[in-house]
Image (cartoon, rainbow, N blue to C red; front, side):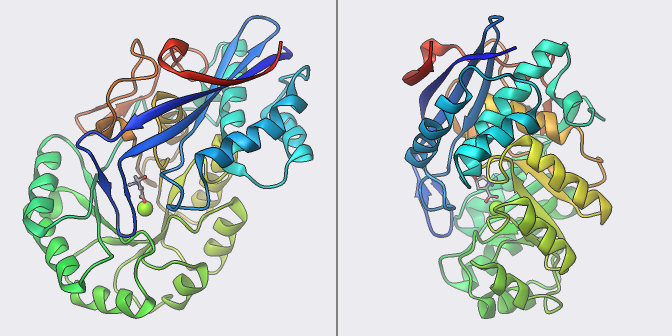
Length: 368
Ligand code: 0XW
Ligand code: MG
């Protein structure tokens, strides 16, 4: 199976409800990049990368497309032999830019799955479940509004709620988390995500003021060094999200005891193959983690769910997908959706989703 051409598409994804609010940034529409690899035997494999705007992490849509313009010509005419072999070719023409390479890795897994007649979950280690738990993310808001949203979602089947905080008075964050806890209590597991907005001093104060509420504190501070400075000083377990920019950082955090868990973003780690390595490192130390991405449509959602299905259910915190915040689907025939707080693992060989190119804007074609 040889790569005949690589098509790069764009999908603009306006946020349902107008805005998604986090501590330091609010996004109103997301710019997703889809990669379609066409092989000489007529197969089409898909990948997707959709940074959450340009400041959530050091990724942006134009950067992804520039990286793909560098990579794609070098892949045309080469074999789709294994994800590792393709990754070596990709790494030989561009250093870094794992979030763009992630779309290539996903498309290669899709093609190999189709070729072998197995789902991507099988290529990643084998699905242990046929549906995975999702979690709901309550954006930064006032206490009553946040408590109401959390209670509604828990009543709808979600068993984990992430509450966004930060970028405002500490008292409001304490009040918000307290209100959510009062509303859902032990009916859901809580995560509190400051998306890097706190100083270490604020994180310590917030931690003490909420000591009686069980939750994991996700990425309160900006840098790995600040996060390391919190080690052993918090009541709450601490999760790393934005800092996990590659598997090496995950390894360092595990070895150094910096994190009690992780919120993995599949594209940030370089794709499903690299995230599977992070999954295995976590399994060695019984560390819980999510398997999700920052944003995007059915393709990245399917990739996340396939990988999440291979995680020891005891360690899987859930898979967040952007579906509730997006109008429509790349593949209306096989939409990836949350139902009853869970997401079914897509069926069939490969990813099990195939976008309709008419719903996308073709930006570039490399090869025939
Ligand atoms: C809740 N998420 C998975 C969705 C947004 O992309 C942010 C992210 C997070 O945990 O930071
Ligand atoms: Mg997070």
